[in-house]
Length: 169
Image 1: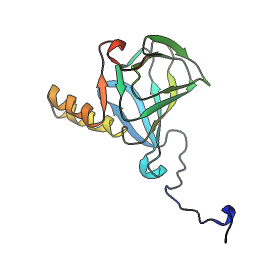
Image 2: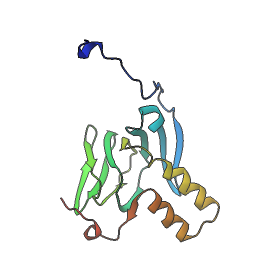
Image 3: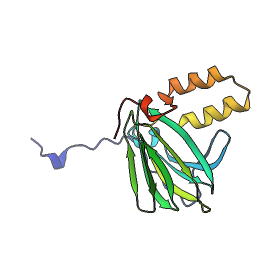
């Protein structure tokens, strides 16, 4: 008989140590913001992915959309990020954390004169692949249907208004 302290530990991820500015660089299509993937699903045992995002001054960010397959967390490191959650618009400042559950309409932008840096987490992981895939499609001249198919494959839905989302705050 063994007690819980003697149970064998199963390792499901791998250790990752990255310094400032290190990680896999990603782009969000034609938006000038910068992203560095810090950990993906292989690193975390398929629990989450994390990346650092820098929204440049006056970034239009991303339009209103929702995710059907994952939650998205935002932890603001510096600057201020304007976020919309359904119909509520907030300004998240350093130390703020915003969790966007599946099915919530959301968008973000940086309307200020200073950059905004934040840590973003997807759980479960996988959605982070859409950024490189979308950039590749746009660079190779893909049509609008190919872009819509990519959104469907990653269970993401662009929205015209918060009323199109199934949940509201």
